[in-house]
Amino acid sequence: MATAKSKKKPSRRKSPTKKPKLDHIHHVAIPVPNIAKALEWYTSRFNCHVEYVDETWALLEFANAKLALVLPTEHPSHFALSRPDAKKFGKLVTHRDGLKSVYLTDAFGNSIEVLEEP
Amino acid sequence: MATAKSKKKPSRRKSPTKKPKLDHIHHVAIPVPNIAKALEWYTSRFNCHVEYVDETWALLEFANAKLALVLPTEHPSHFALSRPDAKKFGKLVTHRDGLKSVYLTDAFGNSIEVLEEP
Image (cartoon, rainbow over the protein chains, first blue to last red):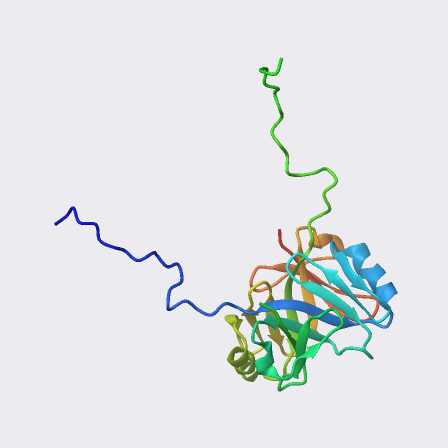
């Protein structure tokens, strides 16, 4: 009978064939010999917010990702991805800001940090 | 009288003291000796889409920014910001994909590409 309402399941927006969510680039880290001077150089030219600064590194917030200015003696030049399953890449280390991450080196010598973030 | 409705101006979300829009990090470019091998290394480990590839470079799309794998003989290791006023940083060069950009070197030897994008 046309009058009988069929019980439809709630519509699901997630298709089973949906591609996995792309990983997020959390930050790029570049080596500078002096954090204060580098901070002045970058903030005077580009539109960004200073999120953190001490004598060994600074973190600048851009619209979609962050730029870390780092002393080369403290951190390698690298970029960081964030994934909820970071620990599958190795043992996570907890940083002062509470974030957990692991550093990888690709097959060509580049450093990649994988941060544990949803 | 309490019954008289006051004519209010439409509310404005934009405050005149609003900070300038933050610049966008368009991509990070890292040097690799072989594009095909690097593409295999990155795409087998991380969730990203291959946006472009030839023998001299590849562009991988991540959730919020891109990763360029480049031959060091073609491009320096760098990161790229996009701004509508890129030309204020120097003479723009038009690339094969139509994008216009200029390369800067910071006071510490790091390369930065500034792309002309809204």
